[in-house]
Length: 85
Length: 344
Image 1 (cartoon, chains in turn green, brown):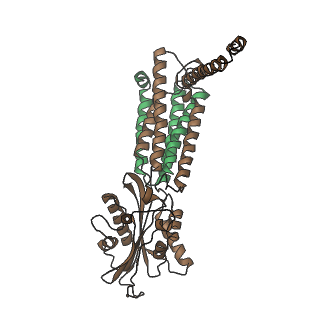
Image 2: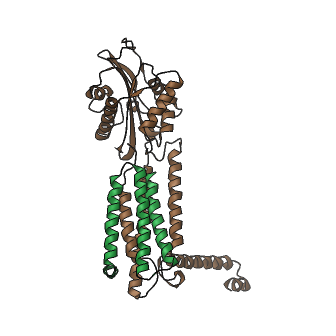
């Protein structure tokens, strides 16, 4: 895991910073749940895009990897969106 | 083979035993294989824990959706023993005012005007209930509803209060108020001119809930009303009009008309059936949070294990980045833990 982080340091730092910003934005918008939902959708889309871009850059990509990021984004987004209803 | 062997031997008694043991043995092996296939990276799952494949992840999303639906259904269930789950998160002030005025205008009464001072008083009352952890018109320190109204300098001729908690949305709460003669009397009182509301989320006796405080009033300067107060004392709530409900006397909310400086206060309260007598077992939000956190915990553990096994094998595979998934799920878990429900 540490080696993985070191190999893609910039990508992981970007991921951490942007996720942190999304978390702060999500908490900031409470109790406006519709805005919170928009933040969640944006966060899920960002994660999916991040995964695809990082894998494309390293040329380790196939349809299964894309579907994996899609599924992880869908699951994490659904969990948060369901809480806001 | 074993089955045939047993039959050939003619051991009628042994036959079912052998068959039974065989089944148990096979079942155990099958179960271990399934668990191994789900969690341990191996040839059968293309060297990636099956649970981390896209299809199982989508399946888990569907399970989360199904669980949400189940919790929503349970929250609406009105069991004789009381509600299993209870809290409100979609009660909207504007909808309550709209609902109240719809009921009034349908009977030819004047629509009430939103009054920010009364809302401030209602918010003060709700906060006080959370701070002192009580569910009553009178606080443990003896504060009455009209104390909150007076504190915001609303000099009233007549005032009233309706309370509600643990409703999941506005329509059933309005319906409960309208089904209770005393609360309906407050809503339909032709002598009121102003309305103030507070919908406040918090923890009341360990359960996350939404308190709704509805305050009515007419200013003393209003010349359209008679100043002669009527006197009546009634003790009726939604609960004790329902069959089979026994509520301790001290828990009974009361409706009363109190003369205070030539003013009168009607104070009533309503809670869903069973709330006071049975208590709520769990908040739906807590239940959802617990379930979602379990899913996240399982996935993080499997991701760690999967990464650990593969790094020790030093094999290469084309899959998503475990570390990135773990980071994402930790952020999601943080948001789930600190998520605050309700609408204010």
